[in-house]
Length: 90
Image (cartoon, rainbow, N blue to C red; front, top):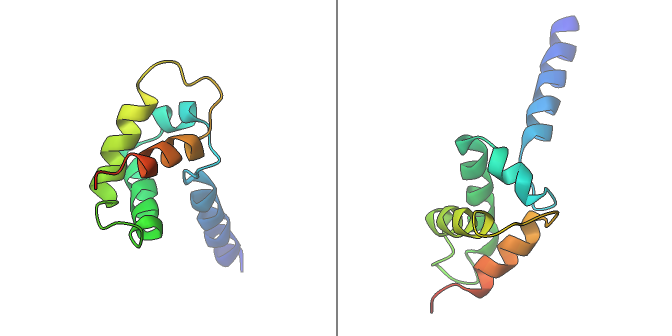
């Protein structure tokens, strides 16, 4: 019973550690590479129906460029995602 509770607590902590589009850009900057890749994979799955160019590599590249330009202050990742989707090449 204790083992099951420990595993459930560990899984909850992992789920909470995932980046989401409601996180601040500053959180993205501090996130691990694996967390950034995980977010890019989820975004690619969500937006691939709009364009096949919206793949994991595109989101990784676009988000990196977007969050590292200027001073994002308190902007959330969803603003960067919207910019990336709007800027997808035809």
